[in-house]
Length: 121
Length: 104
Image (cartoon, each protein chain N blue to C red):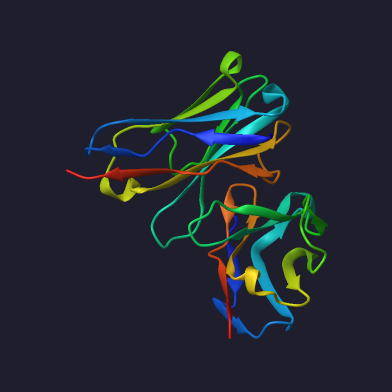
């Protein structure tokens, strides 16, 4: 079954870091890319970044540049998104999505179930 | 940075009616990369349309996309109760703010 399965919910303190995983199955992981998109409560979707799962090239949204790191482990068919210096405004649902490895502009045709992250003191 | 503006904010229609959702880009964008997603309450988004007008796998033919340049449209030809959702347009690293479709 072609799917992306994300890690479980997290609660973090302000200033801490978080790392969410996205495990791919049912397709050749390295033939695609993985995007990370977040959605604060009641808000629009917000693109954070992208990794070409084959060659490891990344592209980040300017908004998160310097605070976000996206990596992948090809042996585990898993992508990771780490966000540092967390603040309350980072409380959101975080999604991974499958995209094209050619260019980050292409659409996301498969999505993970989402990971809830709460940042609170 | 490209800004995508969707209208209307909310659309209330009866089952069987036609729904027309608009997305306007702040500058001309490539149709190749333009997409529409559906997000039902409590669910992850689902790809409906890619390349501005191509339906994704498994999407019913009542959904269609059109447009080019700065103006794009998602049409639901005959609204079904299961179409209640928020619809987002997307291009590159930008999403629109969404259009909520309600059943009257």
